[in-house]
Image (cartoon, rainbow, N blue to C red; front, side, top):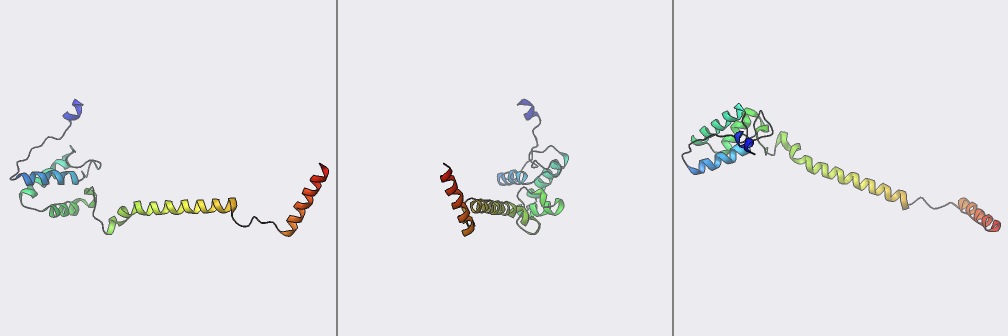
Length: 146
């Protein structure tokens, strides 16, 4: 447990207002480290994450809005830099994939259940007259033999 604290990111920035510090925390948790890829820039010790945190601080102090900052980061690093990419052009499949997979699974389940029900008790199991006559003769023969 002590080792994890030793590896923690320790940076302090002076903010002109507490509101900017809150926005800094929110945005640094929203932005993904381009090198680490599984950490946000708030948790990453990578040099690029340090640079992004510094840039984020500078842009906040310069008066940039959250959208302006996110637009700048996306323009520079791609949509991947956001943990929650925008819904649009290249990310439509990313957002719709869970719904599409769920619908496909429901379709496969329905088809499987339908094929099982038709195989077990569905139509096509009635005997022709010739088959009924043959079955009757076999039953009669069995009764005579017993």
